Image (tube, rainbow, N blue to C red; front, side, top):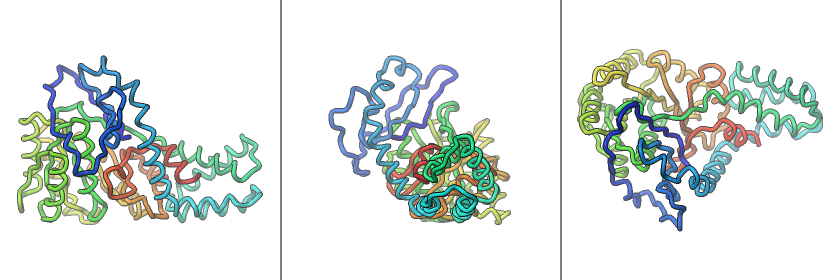
Length: 370
């Protein structure tokens, strides 16, 4: 269900750790019903492809994993399809006619722009679609919609990339975003999935200006049974520095720094994010290894503007796109793919743990257009 990690080690592996992730009852995990002989077969817990240095060669999970995975993933696809229904229905209406002519393409252009696909991505998709229709000699509007799914999937393909942990010890992630995008909640969900994948996680509550942020992060830390570094009213960069040092000393796998919400237009606050990044680099060479931006999918083209601004300031390595449920602006991923193709590691369609999933370009295109 949640296969996205590929843990690698350049040298001898660290001593195995066993965080108490088996206590998953608070999330409402149902006990497994006669799973195949594999340690990753819990029904709701993520099926995470963590490549452990020694046992992985002899364990059977590669053969057993496909059995339990389809049901949870199918459930996720149903939620994604429902979440994108408002966007997809407006585009689907274009293909209800019986003719393929300029009128169809004009209606499709308007529908894509209304879905916040953006001018550049819309022009690209229309040109690509017309060529595909010509090559396929398509005569049915429904066939054109199928070809549009292929065109969109190909456009989104560069955004599809796995988040890798384990190449550095610890892997340090810095998470940024504007207030209200779902940043702290997304960190909590990711932390839970990491913990269930037997990764030791340490959280840094570097959003020191909003007490609720520390409390919210603390709740997720308790649920996932992970440690948290927090200081009331402390300097965000200092908290991040202490967390990275503590993570190295304690031998954790991942350190995640939550930062205060910042608007790209608040230049003095964006400078503070740059400072946090620099200070993290002083605590560990090469860190942060991931700079993740959480964006609200409801904001449409504003989400693209945020990607551009944060990328220019910090050098983003990945995106988490939240709140795609109930929006008519799901086409914004096409705009991001065309204008600033930062990998989309995860997309979210709700508040539950299972509502955050890895991004798959074809799955997204089919959920949007079929």
